[in-house]
Length: 107
Image (cartoon, rainbow, N blue to C red; front, side, top):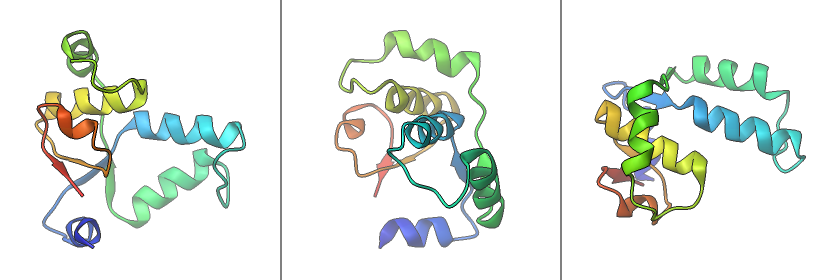
């Protein structure tokens, strides 16, 4: 799979948005996402194990939200798009709605 190859390439920097961590925590607390342990332990451990960096959510990205076209209704995904735009990053997702934004998408 292309995603696994890209993530596994040590020449690439891989980031996890705190927005994704928030969404994972919400789904876990609602019982919709089973994890082997609580997200506050599981996510940082997995990030460290796989060399994944945390991507800060700053003012620049947050303010881009107002100018973003309304292709996607999911606020988590919209904020991730804003972060990618603010940091000039590529998003790795199979979500075709995200591909409608002016941000590079891989899957």
